[in-house]
Image (tube, rainbow, N blue to C red; front, side):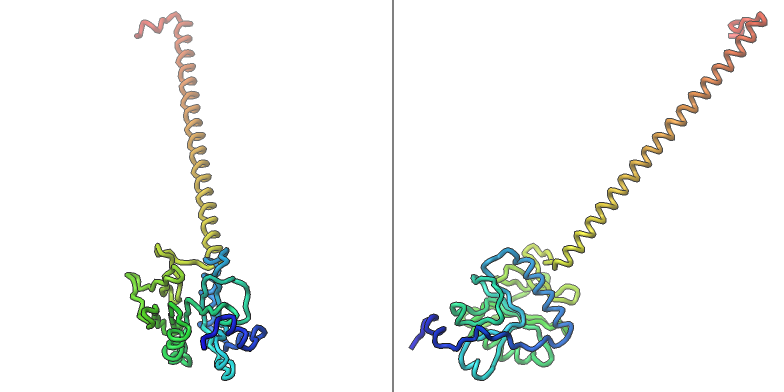
Length: 263
């Protein structure tokens, strides 16, 4: 018998009160990497009312899973065409049967084999998640897969060794030892903190340019004033020379000597 989503929801236990049961990040590097990705996604998706981003959040998808306490929570996942409201966990039968459209796992020594094996099979065959990525913050191992004909196929890298996500409309690639998002034009997606730093740097550069322009204006003013002083000094010297010459000529005239006779 095939159940509708509403029938399935009615048959399943109420887990709306359950919170995520995911373990903490394995190392500080894993935590920093996840926080970085979430900050970038939140920033670029701000204002959207049709997409949800989950980080280290349990995904409940079957009664058997609940009985076995077999919690499966991706380190990072995105679901499109849903409300972005806050959730304590992702309950598939409370979300109209919606599974994640994008999943990323951060590999570690204790989870790598599971992420590459059991979880990859789960996301491919049960979740049917269109895109699955993994990345190791320690070794920088990085791979991405796209669901094609029911099977995950590797996403080919571009010329910059970045992998394109059709779900997000962004590329993923390693930059300065971290996994980062890039826009279609290759521009790095910045965190709010990086944007604030960039804006501060631009403000400081503008201030420096304004100060340099002010200095140049003052220097030009000083040169103009110096040229004016030199001009006035030359004029004063000329007037003094002319006055001295006139005094000499008058002295000659007073003695009955006509200066014009010497011309």
